[in-house]
Length: 298
Image (cartoon, rainbow, N blue to C red):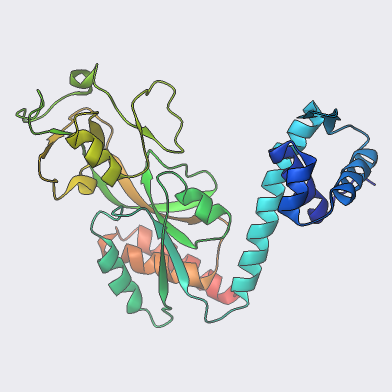
């Protein structure tokens, strides 16, 4: 039998992350000999070594590296399933909406007001994410719906509807060479220092790391970099900075996203309210039918 228990996977991931049995044992609040025995039982059951051990060094084998990657996904999936099951059984659970600070394009109050008019509306808890982990909140069950930006956020595995599309602007100090331009092109930005967003891969971007728009504004004001952002994230423009439209930058869209397999009335009601009368008639019946199906199943 090669099946592994969730507890064993948790033990293995702790050792794989720490590469030290002692530290992993402390993290797990178990004795180190018990942890070592558990890992050896896993290796025996799987028929492959997971670690190369010496008196001074612990290293993952190729099999261990594979189990670390896929085991982490498995643990996340189990955790998400447990959270969703508990929430499905709680008829009073609030709806949880994730977004980044200021990342609502000015639509949030209207969305909440429209949802509040629904007969089945619940309290909405607002969760604030980092620069790049909103999709993670949805995948692991921490949030039910989210406001994400394309093309920046990964929408794999998520259903979504576009709420707002806007152009992108360059944010520069008021004394910058481009500050008096009516518009610029991406080629005009060549040679400028751009930020590295924390958690977002960018191998060709070598500027200072920033975690949010506020940090970016401080760095631009200090003359350390410039930024290119969706227009709504820059309005109102902070003192000492200027926003200049970038005419050939791909547009940015704010989307409402949720896990594509989630058919709960809780989510369907919020999506239908968010789309509302602003959406084309061809879209509204589809959402209505989806909500009816969800209510029948739920």
